[in-house]
Image (tube, rainbow, N blue to C red; front, side, top):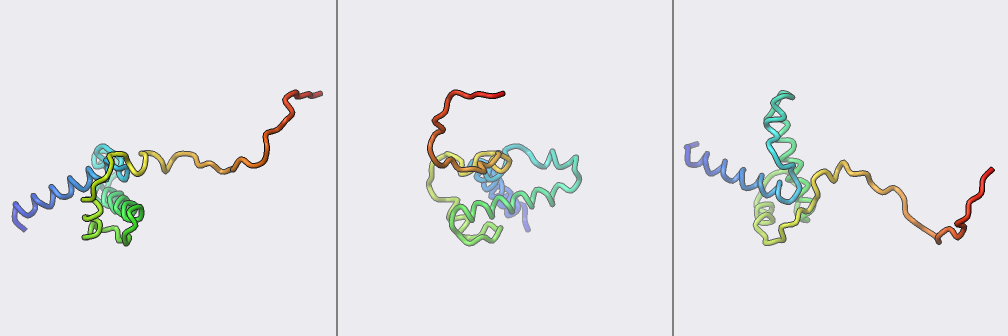
Length: 113
């Protein structure tokens, strides 16, 4: 693989990563730096990237492969608004585990002993 071809692959990965960051599939920043403290940089980054691709594919309604295939590239080329599909930190946000049903409680004066 020549320098030019390797450089084109690097550019494509940068574009794909920035797309995933822009629309909330990857956290913005440099995960490689944080992962240096943890050990295996390439493994954890590849896992995060693959999960982000799978989530994008699921959200886009295309076959979920975890790879950037032709249909994923076409999905990424489509025009769209700039709002993220997912908010960063959504997965950690507390989920609502109840549903409000029935009428409002009519008693406003409380008594106790």
